[in-house]
Image (cartoon, helix red, strand yellow):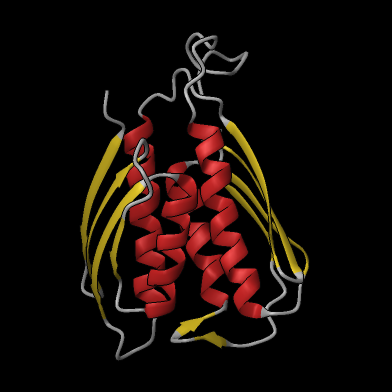
Amino acid sequence: MSRKGEIVRTTRETDISLTLELDGSGLANIQSGVGFLDHMLALMAMHGRMDLSVSCRGDLDVDCHHSVEDIGITLGQALASALGNKAGIARYGTAHVPMDETLVRVSLDLSNRPYLVCNLPFTSERLGTLDTEMIGEFFRAVSQHAGITLHLDSLHGSNNHHIAEAVFKAFGRALREAVAVDPSIRGVLSTKGQL
């Protein structure tokens, strides 16, 4: 059975079409209008072994905020749609990703209780045309709309590009672990009987 989510979101600020296939091979076709974000989403897809297509036309003449946040919203919605009732999934995922001097940890729970803890000490305002403060906003939007408890921690590192890259790679890897189907799980992995 295909675990796929397709979302179209049109507002006065952005026009987004996004498709997510959880059981993919890491293919990515990303056109967000924000080059650094395209690179990060392609890394996330590759390391999460998911197929991701994103097309966004946004008001980049203002800044990147609306495009980045709204892509996070649509990604979260697509993930929620692809997972359905979450029956049989591992639910939790954690990944540590090193990149030269940087080490990042991402831990997540597909709990349907959105919460973000973001400890990413960026020291530059921008990576390409992506405002670094928007990385936290992107993951906040994903967390809220997919129902993820999400912890992002840079354990050490000084290069802003490395920190950002390690976060997106680690998120992809942790998500792959959490969405994995475990045949020994009947229903959802919760004593409540639902997430």
